Amino acid sequence: MNIGITVYPTYGGSGIVGSELGRELAARGHNVHFISSTLPTRLTELNERVHFHEVEMMSYPLFEHQPYDLALATKMATVARSEKLDLLHVHYAIPHSISAILARESIKQKRYVPVITTLHGTDITLVGADRSYLPITRYGLQQSDGVTAV
Image (cartoon, rainbow, N blue to C red; front, side):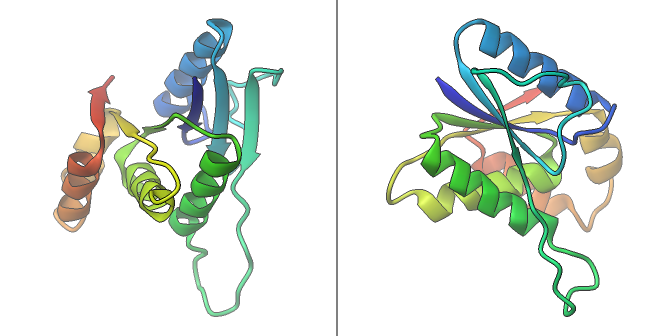
């Protein structure tokens, strides 16, 4: 399979779990494409089965904060098309599941790419507890083709 994985690239749990999962999937013969703002810290080497696609942020004076979630969705869609991804596996509901769903929807006429969302602790304890994020978090989970939890 060709699998796209998105994680926060830091030392946190989602980066560690996603990176280790990707490495193990590659060791089992799958092609894994990490899509993130920077190379995940736990991902120490790339090879013929482990690839990295950097989400590039444009600098535009109108935006006080660059829209990472939209840039991520664009990169996910681009990689899904160019690498013929069979699956997008995202770690963390916000913004990753929303970006993946937007990417999936933007290319669905050419190919359908299922989205699997893996929840981590702070998805529930922080984001899930903030009522302003509840509707979009719920939507992301309901629109995912599968949901797992660490």
